[in-house]
Length: 314
Image (cartoon, rainbow, N blue to C red; front, side, top):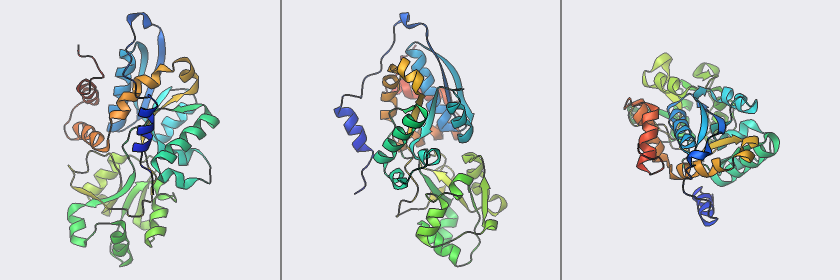
């Protein structure tokens, strides 16, 4: 039976790891600087903003580089020491490390542990406490399109494709070329897309993919989407069910350079209560406030931290 990430949270709590937020006294001046960076999306902006706010409250000097760049640019900057603390996702470990244990990333607990251990040993990068919110990859279609064609699962989509009906999928190149992504879907559900049925984006810009699907641009009728996306409901998109659970589990996790973790181990305790508070539904709601509510990401971050009692009101 697949273990859920709730087991990891339970172990943390039993071990006494769910500490309350430490707030440094005024004498803590001189902590840092810590450069915080995230990907260019609403989730990165919101969660990155929360990390910045909590660290500053704890007395750290913080360089705010939220919405820094695409996943590959962010990872390169972290590896080069240009940034210190980033928001990443456990399933991304499959791209960072060569290992035969690829099935581990389909399990929340095992995927987190494998990514944590490999990155610590190879790169001196420390994966801190993750959120129990699976931002996994999926395939979405417009609701009207799903209803017209009887699409509820990836298997239904496979039957639609094999019947020779028009299909155009837009996705990140990393997903399209991955055995745990499109290749895995094709093998598991028995279909194969031709090159002219695919639009692949090197950057993996989620907003661009969703917009192409929503506007039916260039014939796009299927798009790669992510589990915590707050726009799915508002855009009336349907995520097709994946009974075989092909893509990995992607848990949002702060990742800190080991050098700074050794100097400032308290950073883990500062951020832990925030990430323990996050669920799939919580992140969907926070993202929706930015994308459709037109609220500034920093305002959303501030309001949430105050709501759960982690940020002092001024």
